[in-house]
Image 1 (cartoon, rainbow, N blue to C red):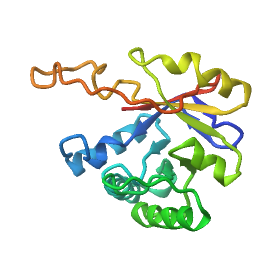
Image 2 (cartoon, rainbow, N blue to C red; image 1 turned 180 degrees about the vertical axis):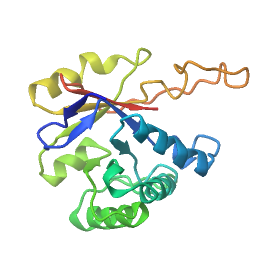
Image 3 (cartoon, one colour; image 1 turned 90 degrees about the vertical axis):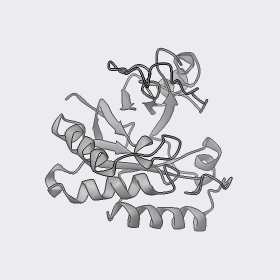
Image 4 (tube, rainbow, N blue to C red; image 1 turned 45 degrees about the horizontal axis):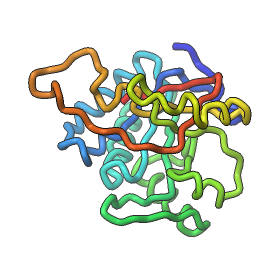
Length: 208
């Protein structure tokens, strides 16, 4: 699979990544963890070399499942791990933090759930949280699909100008745009929510 550099980070990622929001189960009606791990392995088999997750995805459950899948792979085949900070792991609590102590605590908790000694890309869930850190921005996630194209004319030009990688989340619009639809799932459409959106000439997609 084609790979591109992630901003100026020195990391080279496949143009398609695996988003793991649904793996957390929250908002998605529950998931089969074994099937989720199998999906991660299948993605790696097809050339995907990065997985995107976050503490807020199922209160940390997504990170835990991703960690199990990583540990069952040989070290040489393990994909890069992207996770986030700034909103905590409890979806019932409104949290917006970017102080050193809070970010350090979130990072430590993510490392434990993932079972790794480092995180390949650590991103802020909110731009305000990133600004508070004072570090360089290498990538920015954008809600982007044929049904939600607003990112194309908003922050996308900003990212192109500032050598920042854009990662599209929900390019399949939470499953609506997937090829196979059943009678049960047909018509079950979730409304996307807006987030800061961006795209640069180096475009990567988190399939979800």
